[in-house]
Image (cartoon, rainbow, N blue to C red):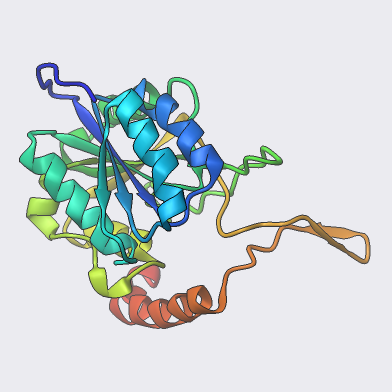
Length: 248
């Protein structure tokens, strides 16, 4: 982890992990090459999963926080953003374990922020998302001002001042729609959600598997039953809170 002098664009990366895949460990080196700090949050590792991560930590010099239990994505994000803020980082960039960073990613994200006509009000910047297997990019629904409507947390470049203005991620959401709720809260407070047309994050939601039925190919997420419970519960809470924004 870098110990150099902080600048206006010093950024701490946060990776939330839960029984991580091997590519998360491979991705750590790429992330570290583009940021000034990195912290990985253990949200419930098994002992045999911790050993490779600890070895990586020793060789590369980043921070690992071992929660020892699943506290949910929102709470884990809040823990580490608070830590980054306490260390003086003016920016955080958030990843989950299913994402892989691409060359020049962080530079391209900052370029999008710098070129934004209202950059002092930008509360988060989001990348393009592409399936790591097919390379197909997810469509980006946009609001009337051209900003992305439903971006994900993973890959989000966020100034730490936004947390002082609108609060932390909603812990009660636990896992799903944490990103949507926060982005709509940014807008509701009069700030801006932006995106980069060049920064590309390789990301697959859930555990997609190629499936062909009657000649048509699908990539279902295969979310677990508990994940589907949180999706359903949180969608109800989300639409109750923000439905009028969809009707504008």
